[in-house]
Image 1 (cartoon, one colour):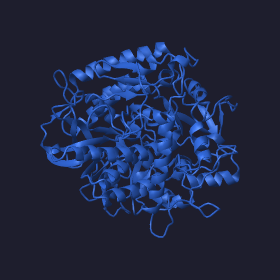
Image 2: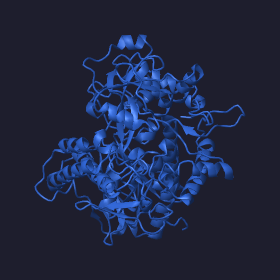
Image 3: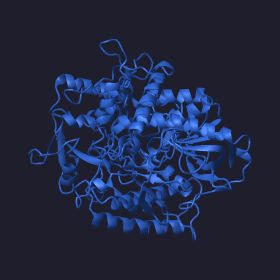
Image 4: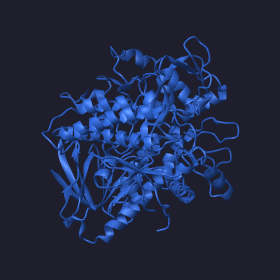
Length: 524
Length: 114
């Protein structure tokens, strides 16, 4: 066992974790960052690249930015949170330019265009900055459970060094969960590290989730590939295999038409509405978008190619760990959440803002969580590492009965309920209810027996996290008896004004959902 | 999914072992990385981006091919290292980020920048 101590432990090395580590270190904390993969390549951002919700601090531009998606999100977002995310994102993007020398493109007016980031470039530079800040980085070292003191305050975490094949623990004053959302190992670009682990850890510590019904994001990808870059499909036409146009299909509002058709027949696509100039710009803007085409000899502008929809769950959905304070604290002392692990309802409501809002949220919430965790840890004085602690992990690490393996079967059982379009995207009460009953059965079984030794603990815990995530999703989706945001109930297609409130979900063996009461104050 | 680790090109720098986010590679006995956990490959192309000698090839299909593609043909077609070249990584290249300005998605909108 490798035993470490820190003021702040950051779990997760995507953008939210990287910013949290930098800002905690700048606030004077000793910081350890542990990532499941490698800080710099891990997560949905590093391999993909993203727009950023970056808006100049001009009142009119800010107003337009905030107003633009409120309706889509079902009016569940919060103006104060949007405003502070816009402020923080503006500051962090400027830091990227000035401190990290990020090579932003330059516009005709000679000014840098700071509305997007190329994932590999962004995260390579964030790794440099994290290490320069003095953070101890543990790559290939997934956290597997939290530690708590006698009062229930989070006091560190345990995990596993995959490359050294040995466990580790970090006794810490505070923990930031920046472990990403949950895409259920769907092979969506860069998302297989995102199995919802942090939400499981948080729930075991007693934290709540919010917005879990907004978890049915699906991205368009060329069939059999991983490249889920959906934006350019707004220049596409979709076809049936007989060559006729699939009416109503589109990347923005027509995705359910694609899903419904894919249930019974292939859907073909051609990006045939882009001018040559636009085609050239696409190649410059998203190099990875073209890999599936160039490497299979397809010209996407003239050839028809089959497409699929890949589940992005809560990576692109907006549900996650509920935020209880302006510093991204949770309802559990010592525990903070950032990025896709946390709910993004505060700025998006019930409909994804796409990569743009998620990227802004990651850098903003990471900044606040890092500073908040550093402040909390400093408030403990020297006591943090002296506290007696206990490990909180249950499902997948401490089964209630005799231990057995089988994580792969559990993963398959969860995927069978959350990946199919006719269950998760095209939702009805009956289908959600049947899927939830099956998932509850899977949970009972794995809770009773699942444990795997050595590095197997990581896969067992990920399987448990996915099962928990799926149950929270469908429990909340059944509780929201209306259509709002991305949560579309075919049996309840109208928006119900009485349900304009967020839903809070929690629990493990018994899952519950209740309406949120009281507004979330920003002032701290 | 990762299909090729070129024995001819690999310089045994271990970079791919370090950067793979899903820990697919182990060091082989002869120093050339082996695909120890290939099923975990998520087809994210990051190993290719970091390989300094363009020794890796990730096929865009997220399942293994029945036969690995022909390395010489890939090299001749300019596909070994093509992603690294596109993102402008490597000595003497300009980062692709510098040119990453896409088309506007609607007539009134700003150009897409990722």
